[in-house]
Amino acid sequence: STEDYDFQLRVLAGGGSALYDPRILVRAPVPRERLMKRYHRAWHKGHGRFYALMRDPSFERSRLGTFLGVPAHVYRGVLREAASWGASLLARRSAAAFAHELRLRFLVAFAIQRMFQRT
View 1 (cartoon, rainbow, N blue to C red):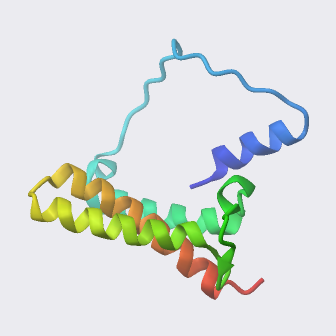
View 2: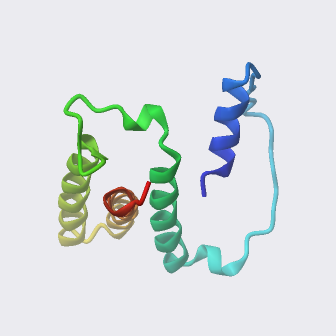
């Protein structure tokens, strides 16, 4: 869930470099289950957990510090995404609602992992 990003960070930290080329095109088969909402819900939850374990310095920074091991901006994000999810559901904007739900799942999983982490 974070292995590509973690690899990129390690390469850069070790003095390596990377290049982005928007002309590169990659084709790969996508299993049918990865097109289902349940897959994306589970993936974002897992990504939040693994991201909490990774401790990315750029994500950890918070002007207000942390509470129970969770950066303050994560709590703000949970409130913002929950409100936006609800508003999108009420407005019957299903695509927007699903996007907010996924971000909320990531943030909540991140927070739970940190609160109960045993390190």
